[in-house]
Amino acid sequence: MTTDQAAAVGAELRAMLARVTGRPELLGVPSDTPLFGAGVGLDSLAGTLLLRQVQTRYGVDVAAEDLNLDSLETLGTLAAFIAARI
Amino acid sequence: MIKCVVWDIDNTLLTGVYLESGADLPGADPGLTGVLRELSARGILSAIASRNPPAAADYVQQLTGADFAAVECSWGSKADAIARIAAELSLAPDAIAFVDDDMLERAEVAAALPDVLVLTPEEAAEAPGWPEFSPAVITTEARRRSQLYADRRRRQAAASEFGGSRDDFLRHVGTQLTIAPAVPDDLPRLHELSVRTHQLNSAGEAVIQPDLARLLASPADTVITVRLADDFGDDGLVGAAIMTGNGRNSGPDVRVPAQALVATVPLIMMSCRALGRGALDALLAWLCRSAAADGAAELQVPCLVTERNVPMRLALAAAGLRAEAGSVAPDGRAVFARPLTGELPGLPDWVTVK
Image (tube, rainbow over all chains, first blue to last red; front, side, top):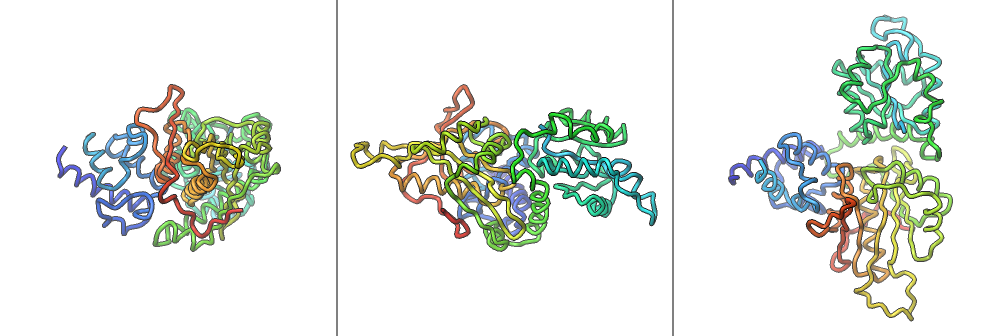
């Protein structure tokens, strides 16, 4: 895995995030903004849709590999989690 | 048990072909119109998958008076249309029946989605007599289910046009969420939720009505309900949780140090209609705050870890609950927990606690 790869995954994740939430402004969300809570406010519906798209795009089943879903802490941690597995 | 019937239009719900009829449009099939009505009264949804323009679905809706929970009008494959309907309504394929007069369409769906119950219109006319279409308990929520899903379609259309965060939207549409202790009248609906919920069910198994009644009567247990309404409609009782050992009944003579008190939540369940509307987050926030107020030092939620209940795990994670790595027991359960110190998850201003 390279930093470039994580960055490329991160850019695609932003597009997915904007799509599942219907909020185009998330295309510019910083890598270290928390996805849950006050940051992005990702809820269980949008989160499930995001993980489904991740699985379709990268073949990485985040929910199966990460019991606590800590990889969803920020966009950066999720990108790194995926990049390490592709 | 079938939860949704996906209907073809041409020569199925209509007695002819919509696009070939010019100004003289075909009428509704009287037998199947009766089936639509009967299924709706039993809380079974109807949806449309048709190779027609969307106007055809509106026409059928006007003719039959039926509320369709999802409408797929496209020239693409019916199996794909049914898969989209299943995703939209959060239903498993084995909860779906598909009715079409065309043998090739039926064959395509049966091959692509083997768990879907594929029927001819003649079979569908008989279906109300079959056990798969006969739920044991029909609650108020069930009778109104078709309408609730039609409300949901309108709500989702409004949400997709609304710019701004989810919370802004929930406020904008007058969301009202009420958290209140369960009463005996809630028992049939609680039982129904425990049977019907999968994606948002922590225990992954049904709780029978006598057990729920016993929990309701037990001073050591709390059964809490969630009701949800907004400008689009009133969804009624959408979710519930059971909490035990929250220290509520430990009187002054009970010498248990506060840090030893653990509040356990053996069951959280939520209708998928409430998904995306903040109800699960609010329920978890209430559980944390209530347990903390009663002196518990930790909240524990044993949760079955499956492919289907990912939304439940996401909500647990968002509320700050974590399981120990590698702690999934052989029965597939892990205990998600959080200390009840520091900042607890907050309740938004549209939540009323009774």
